[in-house]
Length: 253
Image (cartoon, rainbow, N blue to C red; front, side, top):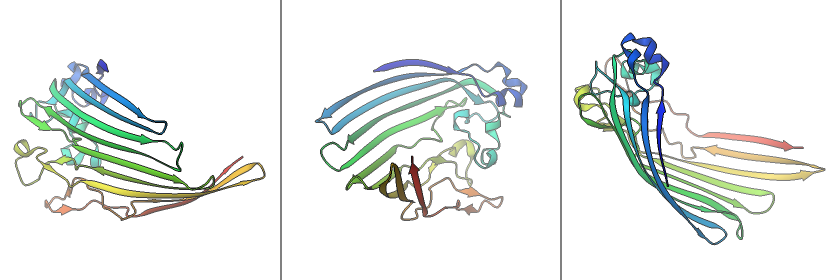
């Protein structure tokens, strides 16, 4: 278990963009964390960890009382948020937030069998409250995150692996409603993807040569990111890289 209080200086950009922000206080956060692990034999460990975080003195906008700077970013140079992340608004150190969650993980090492892996499942919730006193979900809030990685070493030379990721979609603000009333009220679809890996190793006169193939996003899943809206408020789907294969050779002397 651990408890801590942390402070961080506000972004220097917020100070420079608006003279009103010169009086901002350091951002504060209280962390409460507790966890436990259980060793199930020489290969497998199971762990669980819970946490609660309280944010205080977070800069919040006077111009847009629903806005807390924790919910801003630099996506598309900040245009999607009216360049709020640059600190052009007059800010007060009165925003608050909460984050709480629990994570379960299971790890199996390669001791008595040729396969290994790790499974992680986490459930969380994050929200922030601006100067209007309304509690809203954070722009980074993802209730569920699941990761599964598996590997199989057939021999000293052949290795195969797979990785699957799942994450709940993040909140965004629909363009056809009042921003103050609908801020972060919608959520994009969940995102998931599968990667595959295989390698072959040779030992040749004192050095190792490894050839590998790595395929990202095997079933060509489009990323679930907040939609982009043009000046005509027409929804535009974000671009996708699709399947990304990589072939390489590693030489170790």
